Length: 116
Image 1 (cartoon, rainbow, N blue to C red):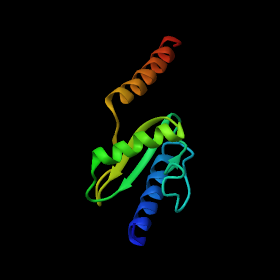
Image 2 (tube, helix red, strand yellow; image 1 turned 90 degrees about the vertical axis):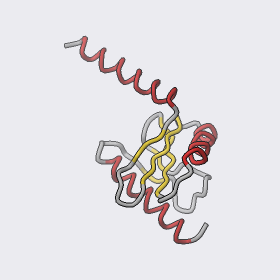
Image 3 (cartoon, rainbow, N blue to C red; image 1 turned 120 degrees about the vertical axis):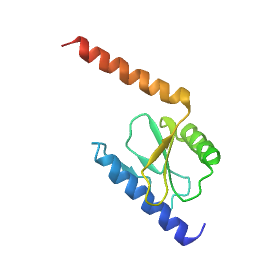
């Protein structure tokens, strides 16, 4: 991996961390030059963050990396956060994982509404 690619990846991680902090999460980078020894970003409970900041992304390959890393680090459901230049961040997840998160959030929301 070239120095330019490494720098762009690190910049993407810092940028995504900053975006997620705006939502109130204490996000931190796994570490510079980690190369898969630690997660890209940590601090989003129950979600393994795989961060990609590239113009051409092989989504299936990147998602496989997220799945493998989420199992290795045991830090939550795999989620691929990615964006191209001048585009918004996108999140790719397996449908089953997304539904589990959505259903859990819905159950919490419904419980809160019942307490009104």
